[in-house]
Image 1 (tube, helix red, strand yellow):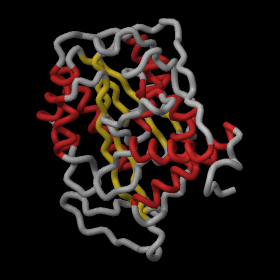
Image 2 (cartoon, rainbow, N blue to C red; image 1 turned 180 degrees about the vertical axis):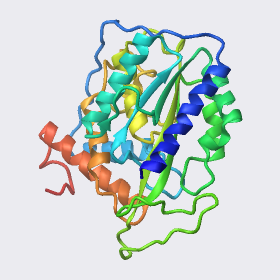
Image 3 (cartoon, rainbow, N blue to C red; image 1 turned 135 degrees about the vertical axis):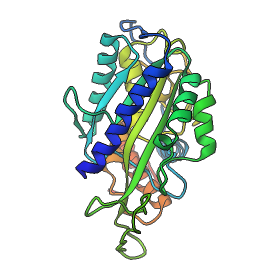
Length: 312
């Protein structure tokens, strides 16, 4: 496990060097101390809550095709480049705090990053340059690593203020060994657990997050850090429509802007990281996340008896 993690982390160290070669300015700044704003929570009842949770999970989860949701196994290390030092540190600290909320270990200062935040004056140009120079960093040559080539093109062309790209690895739940054939390697030995269970789980290896600092101006580092934290810890669809939900994912889409992560966001991340995810098939794994998030939200809103099909 340590060798695989070091190799992945080393790739992001190399990427940071590539970033330096592509950038024309030494550093950029995001506002830190704007007064926080609040967004009114979405009020729902019973069956409507189930519909909202099911639709939200379906809308936002975007793993590689035919794969279940991936998550970090135990430890993350957050790094930031091309940002003013105090802003970079504030973002690293905030994203790290989001990771701690789902009981992930956070690397000490100087650790090799597997979550890399990059500031840019032109996010699209920087993303395009990174993909052209380091294509295997974004689409490694094994099954289940990342989303499609079309999605990668979207990563380089979207006008979104923040763009992200995850790389994951299917592994044996018991040993941590790759559960897919790696480039130049032998086919893995797969032991099944019957038709309904699997011993293969999908683990995040690295995520690259590019922040267009002009488009993100006016935000404080808590708002931006919480937003980055959610998309760093979960494979969020960049094109997901989230206006119906009380979520930090609406940061760039709604006024007033959320002041930070909401209870809805916390419930989703907690459900993702607490779920067993040993069901055979992505649809069953999504249902497990839905059920856990639904129980959390029903208890929090006093709707346990009003939600149809809610297990104890």
